[in-house]
Every structure is written in structure tokens, then in C-alpha cells.
Length: 422
Image (cartoon, rainbow, N blue to C red; front, top):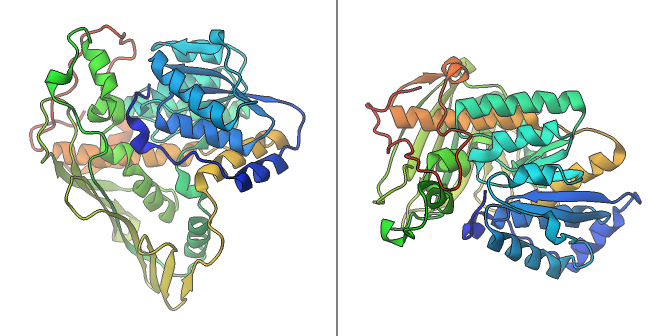
């Protein structure tokens, strides 16, 4: 579950007076919705604040994490903003790797899944089995076995008519929704190529082995530094740059690629951890359309996120300036009001629950997750991988029954040309 120091990954959770008034105006039911939060790091705390801000007839009543100190920080921070609606009694604070089971069994209506993604398939499956409405942070798996487990949960959620909203937040961005609608309406003609970047500095650098407390087991040490281990975080292309992959998939009609070639490696030395700090993935779609993603987490380099979608009649550019731009036969720039997409995704979830409707983002969120894993594995192995190979992959990066005090050696640092595709 999410560990301290992950605030770098969180969306801002500060609510203004206008936010409060807007959320209060949407309180259209006397029924109180009980929220449970699984994963009390920065992203989880932010998601809880956005959920409470989206629906003023909701209460946060239960939280779960592997560390009690994380729970303390989350409750304290949220109580300052929502003093009358954070109602987590001592018996609803659940600690440990199995804490999610206790939370799901304590009477919550809506659950927010915000732990490191290595746990996501297990938590998503359990939440669906328990009949909860779900906000599921991205990505939804870190390996092919986890993907299939999570995809099965998506299908079960459909059968049970449960709301399932994904944390691929750009799908709820006001300006991106308008830009992609125009894209789908043919504003730039047929897509001929896409180039996307997700260049940043290091997100959560791996500490030296000397920082490890001798009392900590392998599992505890790795959980405390989850971003640096592929079985927990999936690597940066799956955990972070998957946002750009999701936009590529969106542009390509949410259809899978045919194949992928990739490259990557690690430049910043680390005594432990097994992730790369840079990737480039080239995805092949129908009609010989190549979609490229470059990602990097290295200090002192150019940083920026860009989506450059070229078509037969023009180009859609997102990332140079604050608004999407179309240049070509049809010129356009978004000039509307850009609302907070993190708020909007939770507003959509709670509005759907209130109306007795169902949102299920499952299929597209699982597609983008596996496309991210595909790019990582193409880079790790140095091979051209097909979509069929990904669907049939047996990769399982860690057993589900690991305990807090266990010894565990994760897969070694990948060596392209030597690391085998599983």
C-alpha cells in the first residue's frame, strides 16, 4: 500500500470556497454514502479529498494502510478540510497487508483504491466481490497475470452494475474531451502518427542500502520504496507515463496495437531496485500507423509532456501551452473553462451513484494498462512483441501471499537481449 513520501505523485487536494459551494450544490440525496480509502499516501489522501468535495452527503468512515502513521497523517489532513465528514472511529482504522479485507467488510458503499499498483488486481477483485462502487487509481496491474485478474473483475463489475471510475484523469479533462471529440469527428483527418513524451526528474529515488533498518524484512524495505521495484510499481512507463499511453490509446479509438518495439535502460546508479529511468516505445497500429512514447526520469534533462497527433489534414498538439491546438484545414484552440479533472472524475462517480446509473471505465483502463506493460517488456527484453503475446503472457512478478516479514528477491535489473519474455 502507499507509503510515506509519495506526495510527489499526488494531485493537489486544496479546496477553495468556490469548490465547497459547487460540491454542496450537488447534494441531491439525503442518503449518506460511506467512503472507504485503501492506501493513505499522497494520491490516496488526494483522492479522498476529491471524493468528499464531489459529494456533500458523503462521509469518510474507514481507512486502510500498512502503516498506522500514514493513517494518522491522512485523517489529520482531511479533518482540517472536512471536519464534520471525516468520521473514522478507532475500529475503522485497519493496518496491514490484509487491511483491505477488513475495510471492505465494514459497511462502506464506495471504495477508493490508491495503493501501489502491484496490489491493484487483488484489491479490485475483492472490492467487486464485496459489491462496492469503486474509484480505481491507475495503473490497474503490473504484469500479465494481474491484468487478467483485473479484467475479470471489470467483467464482474458490469454484471453487478457497479460503478467503476478509473484514475486516468485526462479522460475527464474539459479541454482534452473537447479536443478528442474534434479528433474523432475528423478535424485532422486520418491519424498518421503520434509522438508523446513524459519527461520528468526522478520521482522517488531509491535510497542507499545503508538506509535500511536491520529490522526491516525484504518485503518491508521494498514496500517502503515501492516505486523502485517493478512488482510493486510496474516501472515508470507503467506507473507514470501510462497517462500518455492512455491518450495514445484514446486517439487510436481504444483498440489495441499490433506490436511494439522498445528500448530503455538505467543511467542513475542505485544499489537496489530493478527499474529503468528512461524508455522509448514504438507501437504499431493498423494501416502502418506508428505511435511513439518517450519517457525519462533523470535530473538535469529537458522536462515536459507533449502529445503530438498528426493527421492527413492537420495536427492536434497538447502540451505546448495551456490549451490544445489544432492546426491545418481546421484551426482551433480550446478557449473554454478548464475545470479540475481530478474533481470531475469523482463528481462523475458520485453523480452516477446518486442517479442509479452505471459508469464502467474498465475496458479502456485495462487496455491502457496492458499497452504500458507491453512497452516496458519490449524495452526490458529488446524484442518486438505482439499483442497476442501480451494476452498469452504468463508473467507474474510476485506471489500474492507475501507477508510483511517475508524474505523476497524480486526479478533482477533487466538486460535487453538477455532478459526473456515470459
